[in-house]
Structures are given as C-alpha cells and as structure tokens.
Length: 167
Image 1 (cartoon, helix red, strand yellow):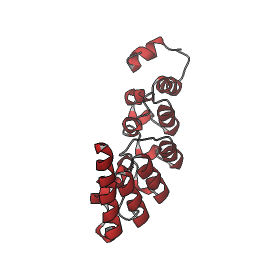
Image 2 (cartoon, one colour):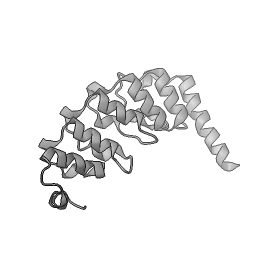
Image 3 (cartoon, one colour):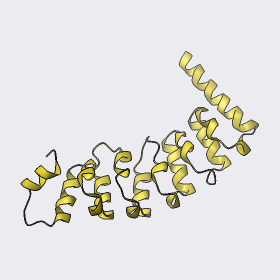
Image 4 (cartoon, one colour):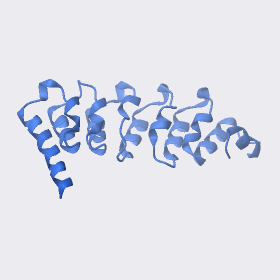
C-alpha cells in the first residue's frame, strides 16, 4: 500500500484508529510519517523503529515527538546501530550519557564525536575517536585534550592509512 488512505480503505473496519496505525507502521516503519503527529505515541514510535526495513533510524527519529523519547527508545537505537552516525543531535539532551555517546563513537568509527556535547567528552573518548577515524576527528577534540599524544595519534593513524593505500 502506498498511502495511509489506501491502507485504511483495505483494512478491517472493526479496528480502532490506533490499531490501524500500529499495523500500518508494522509493514514499514518509515510510514510513521503518514500517521498524524497527535496519534504518535511511544508504542507506535517503537514499532516504527523496530520495523524500519532499511535500518536507517535517522528518518524515523526525525518523526518521533519529544514526549515519546525515553531510555528504552534511545537505548534501542543505540544498541541496534551499526555504522550510522549523527544520531546524537536527534536525541533530547537529557538522554545523552557518556555510555551512549561512547557506543555511538565506536560504531561510527569515531565520527560521532562531532555531536557529543563538550561536557560529556573525555580524553579517552576523544583519543578513541581520533584512532578510529584515522585522525579525521581531531578538529572536534577540545583544546584542553589536544596534547602531544593526541596529535601524534592522529598523525600516526593518518600516516598508517596512507601507507596502507600505497601497498
């Protein structure tokens, strides 16, 4: 079905609107965009995330109302993310913890450091990000952490990558 209207016409007339919306996003999580905002609740948003056929949570997260965010939803996205980046800016700030940020730094090959709030960044997080990103994220490392070791790590990581590409 291409639209919610077509889906509604072909569905069981005895279902409540909530049941219809729930079964609609179970088919494809991205269809949450067709559900009226005032009908989007936590369960509906979680169902949409769990049924995202492309596992690209970013789009669905842009549709989730702030009041639907909670630890369960955020942890689901963090734990089921692999290789994606730029989730941190979609989460309400109160859900940004060191552990969640560190996990996303790991799975994004360090690139998520860009969106980690300054007060959460630690020397170890920044060093790991610089290592994983092959020096690319040094620009997002606060000046207070940019010591000799940090800069040499960025340089070595970059140099190792360059040498490997020559082989």
